[in-house]
Amino acid sequence: MGNLTALKVKHAKPGFHGDGKGLYLKVKPSGAASWVLRVQHMGKREDIGLGSADLVTLAEAREKAAELRKLARSGKDARAERDRGKVVIPTFAQAVDDAHKELSKGWADKTGDAFKASLEAHAIPVIGRRRVDEIESADVIAVLAPIWTEKPQQARKIRHRVLQVLAFAKSRGWRSSPVPGAAEIRRGLAKQPRGGNFAAMPYAEVADFVAAELAKDATSARLALVFAVLTAARSGEVRAARWSQFDLQAKTWTRPAEMMKSARPHVVTLNAAAIEVLRRAQALNGGEADKLVFPGARGAQLSDMSISKMMRAAGRKETVHGFRSTFRDWAAEQHPEVPAMVAEMALAHSVGTATEQAYLRSDLRQLRFRLMDAWGRYVAPSLGIAGGNVVKLGAA
Image (cartoon, rainbow, N blue to C red; front, side):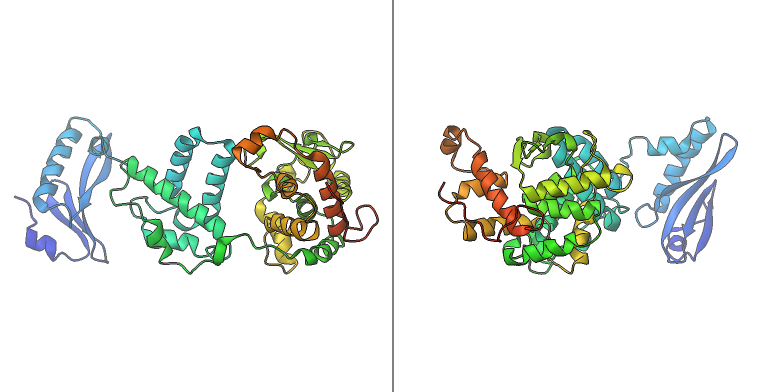
């Protein structure tokens, strides 16, 4: 018989309490108690944990200890034998890597990159070190709370991706509890702004905003912001743009399929103001064909935050993506004579029904040139062809 009894285990004070033959009860100052077996392996002493005293009884601890002592005496690694077949529970950060590696096999590169980048930016700093079996609704809410009302669409995407990782973890046997539900998480967060759309600047204010930005130092991030406004392009498309995609004589920017949300190539028609911004970027960064047009530090791609920072520095709360809505509102209200599908094509949106798409073989490029020229004059008259802010296009 050992030195300990069930009663002694229950009332043990902080410290080590020996039961004999290398088995100890370790009690922390907090009162948490666990079993430890001390053995010799390869001439060195090893302490092997046998589990919490709340979960493993004294009798069970003695039984485990006897098995591992026998293995140690035969020269085997008792710790390795203890862990054989045991499921190792990863942290959330490790589970993100594993989930991305497996799930991205069926995704476009852009989707996989966005999945991992958004979780690294918003979730891993908050819950990255927690084991996936410990993460509950409150943890997911802690990730989402800082951006839930400020960036509602992005927050919903991140919620979906966090739950994807937890569902992946459950499928691998890393957690037994149910994955928190979206509705349960939503109940712990403020009500999002109606519609959850990207905040957009009124088009009547855009020309003054752009003029103020052009009066500041011409950095890559600032030029990228102005270029995004002038082309109504997505921030990621502008940040990934390379000189090889541009034909300044033809006034086009041909974006490859892998760069597009639709996974289809798209030709952007460039106005005179956008071309002038490209010339300034060329003077600032050079124009080698394989290089980024708007590089960040050491030639790396700018982060989304680099461009958004320009908005915050200007005292604006709108998003860069919101300028696409600004352009769409301007086209609808200032140029109602232009077919709606022209503006939609300029935004690289799909237009018409499936039947209409099957018969519409033109990309309406000439009409888009005229619409984007008018937008350039409206937004940045100082960069484009001289003329007023309102330019009528005439009937199509």
